Length: 113
Image (cartoon, rainbow, N blue to C red; front, side):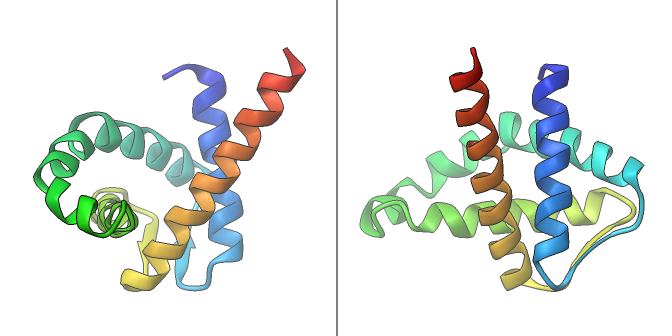
């Protein structure tokens, strides 16, 4: 993970935590650690879980991926001190906002190049 991508993820996490009630981050260090932990989870665990849940994803036309993302956010909340999520729905909307903000920053950086 490059430094720019790591910082973009951290900014996306800060924005999502600000917008979503039920998500608490206590320090900037927690945000940076969370960005790394989410990257590690997405690299190592998400492909395996996606493969296991592939039949459900096919039936739901990919909507179940949002549930998987929320559960992975809840896993990250158990690992990272200073990051707390109040339940499934807060994690669900947090993952959506982080994905959208990261995609927006990605589109802006591609247009700048």
